[in-house]
Image (cartoon, rainbow, N blue to C red; front, side):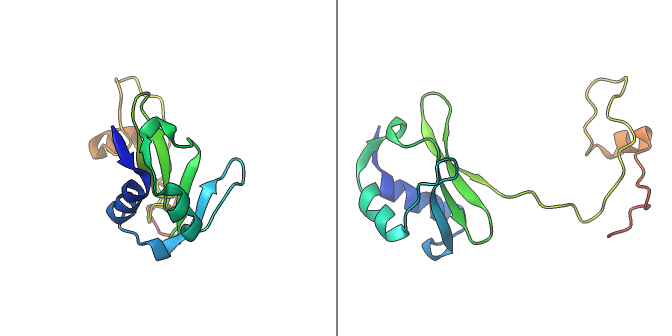
Length: 125
């Protein structure tokens, strides 16, 4: 399917909850290639097949969230990533191997059974 890359990118930016003025970086983290939004608008305002786009292209926003090109093997699209944010409360993990099949750490009952108690008794730091 042929699309306009600039239009797809602007739509992805809106869908991420950001605006163009929130952009702090457009380019490749790997190679250091980068450009301004003004330049990007000029070079991206073209029809394209999704597999034609550089696979290391990313757009980073002021709040450290970013969009990057993702491929499932056939179709590429913009994907979003939110940087890791520390949980407000911390709980010590005492076991990660359990004799029962797959126990998720977010399963409250499993946590109680695993006796996953923070050394600080759930105090915030």
